[in-house]
Image (cartoon, rainbow, N blue to C red; front, side):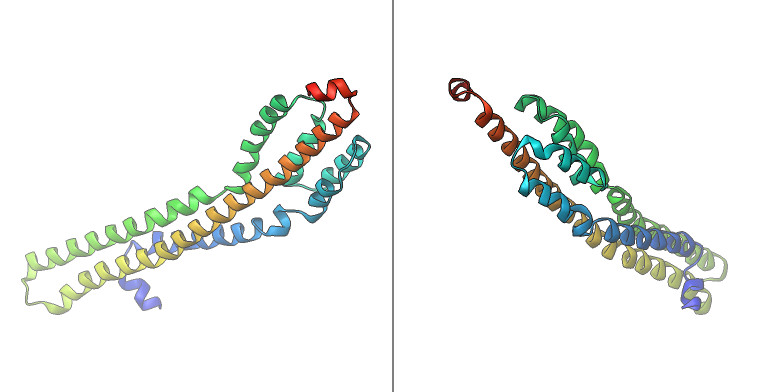
Length: 213
């Protein structure tokens, strides 16, 4: 393995660094995008069991015990439960944009690694071919041993770049899809709580006002 690395030339060092970055990002996303960490069962229970405005303080206290997109958004709904639906929607859109950034954190960096790695490999290929042509110019085409070093460098860096990029890109798509699914789930629970709040509010109004609402 060390010999393989040395034959790849100078571009193997940034490629190695890129691979370490990719591994770190993938591990971080696996840890951060665990289902129980995003769709916290206790917060889902808050939404499922919400039945009156007497539950607001208890629900808010439970949300404050946890960190994450779902408890943050549910707490936002509870804090603004006395607003009209369009106003709540506007507040939720602002809060939702901030929480989406959390779910999609490091995905851009992961995509960048997948895009840059083949380019680094291509740069190593070009440097290897430059070395080949320099040998041809100085010693002619008969120096097979001298030529093989440049050709080897050209091939090794290309293979390494693709070896890093392909799995990284697959993980990027996997985590992007997972984040999108979590966003849809959070939106579902948020809408459920909002609907419950307005249903409770409607029941509390006098009959003529409830008809108008």
